[in-house]
Amino acid sequence: NEKKIDNRCQIREMNMKRSLVLNGLSETVSWSFMSLKKAQLFGFDNNKYEIKNPISEDLNLMRPSIIPNLIDAVIKNISNGEKQVCLFELGPIFDQNFKDSQIMSLSGLRYGNIKKHWLKDERGYDVFDVKSDLETILKVCKISTKSYTIENCDSSHYHPGNSGSINFEKNRAGVFGEIHPDIIKTLNIDKPIYAFELNLTDFPKETLEVKK
Image (cartoon, rainbow, N blue to C red; front, top):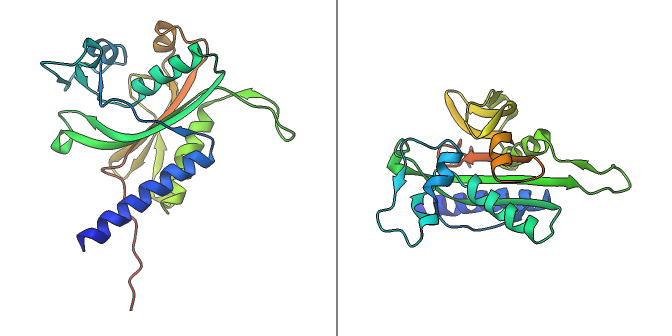
């Protein structure tokens, strides 16, 4: 039943978003576009979809990743005096290599320090925090830890020594880690940013219980 399938997908996405909110992240919605200049900064040089008549020069490319838009939101929050920014977004990204030229991505990031409370001292976010965010998503989706491996990440916008990827068999489903320090320096951000990205289009389907 197609309607039931759609409902299952919606419920799964709702559970993912709820788990991130419980982990302290706030949901945001941004443009499905970005600037070509920003894409080049993040290393997205190939397979791009440029817009011939953009509404703005800052929105002249279909975004190949949500992360640059989330980092723009971090910069705006910093300028407003925020010391801690934790955001996520679920939406489409675009690349000529994707089937149908787009996929659904769930992406998030953390900037700043974890606030001190009676059990823990204040500390800066690190790669293990965003790894935990991803693992929480996999857990609520009932994905067994035996079904995936964590390997090195080769994405150009992540720190090569402080990042990783989540892989199901031969498919890379997600990446996480520290945004490359050169990008952070170019954007004049004072602290590291840690992020994760999850490809929901190729995400393993939930196993349904067969009723007798």
